[in-house]
Length: 280
Image 1 (cartoon, helix red, strand yellow):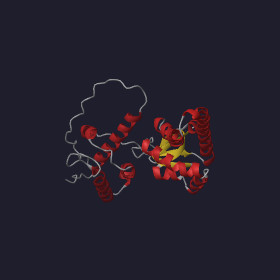
Image 2: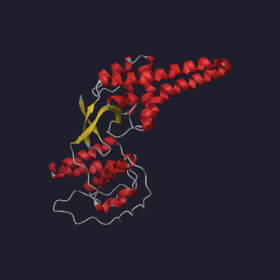
Image 3: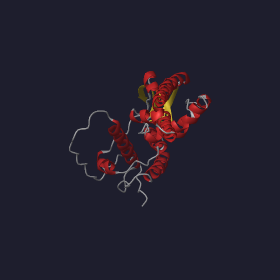
Image 4: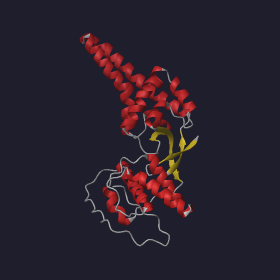
């Protein structure tokens, strides 16, 4: 089963979605480990119950149960960026719908829904939801905005945006965290196909998308910035930050480079992209 996933820069990726049998086997491995931990706790509790009062036994039992049932998947998936022990064994990973690594909130939603889908209904709800979803998503994935994939090198179908040098200084200081992934995808698709559009359509579509994007960017770009240069700068900087955030390797002390100053754009070509003035 294959499918398109949108990366953090809104690059369309072709990833192999995990099938129900492999996902089910991964869950069985995780459940076996969790049940084993609970049984070990029961054994330990039985050996020491005589020295504890009933209230203490109930409190400790609740903490351990919650820790094993909810804490295990949340901790593993957050620290490993989407892999539990079962997924690690089978080469699976949970990623966001845009193809990026999941965070704590995604793992939390998946674990809370998993309590109902997997534990309380013996996996029946999770199986039915996965069968009804074109991407094999259970309810936890649908609410968290995640999907389970087989790890492989993605194939990029559209070129990555290149940072306009004269906007690098502005982009390095801009707040891009609120930009929705679907809007970034629209910007990426527009840039990839802008050369194929009629001039009037290219201008109106570019201004509309840039007007939507600029509402989520602070501060706005310098007045008169061409639409396509603005969108390219936003996407390139967004991708750079995500790669920097999740790049492996030990942190080393470095001297932060001074971002280049924002200067006026070069002379436009014969058929320049339309410029726009960000709303005040």
